[in-house]
Image (cartoon, rainbow, N blue to C red; front, side, top):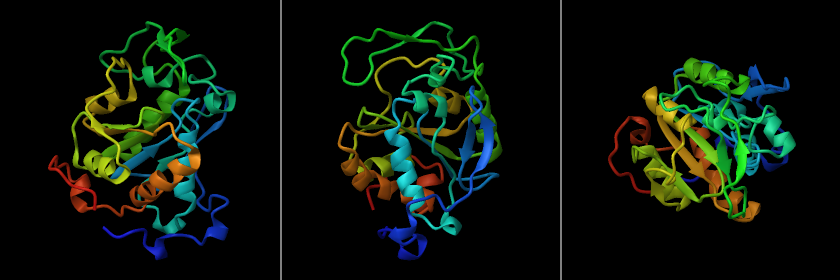
Length: 253
């Protein structure tokens, strides 16, 4: 695999704004447009997501940096820069209604029990959020489900922070490829139960799901090491075997 092909990228002076017009796939609880950049209909190979948790907005910055560098006609896989815009604007993990969207999917193990988390850099896991009145109770969740059903991705890559790992229960070829590229460990899970999570929902739909946990590093360092790999995913510049369903080991190209 070669580095970024120059013909796929915009000159740096044109990377300050998004050249690609998004499709609005829904509205948040507060009425903010939920936007998807790239192909509007499936099937697609990979769907990329950022900021499902509003307090992980660095994921939006990194994915936006990658997308802004790519020529609009070179975008092959769609990207949602912000799944939870209300949470990002308020700086909260949850949406505007106090629900952790990553516990609101209508999975077999969905639970109405409160969700407790510790926050960034804190020790006590004592901050409480809701999981919703029922699975898919939140407009952001319902819109995301409809988007996935329309795009029919083979795999979804969801950016989170700051656990510094690639979570992939399948140890798929795509997960191994990303892990090798960004030099983060490939793990089967994050070590705790996640009822109603997007990952569980994708697994129940037969969709490969990879949770890409960015490290707790300065943003310039993250951009330098992770944005180039995201550009490869956006432009489909990866080995064909990565998305053919094979679980064979594929080393970093």
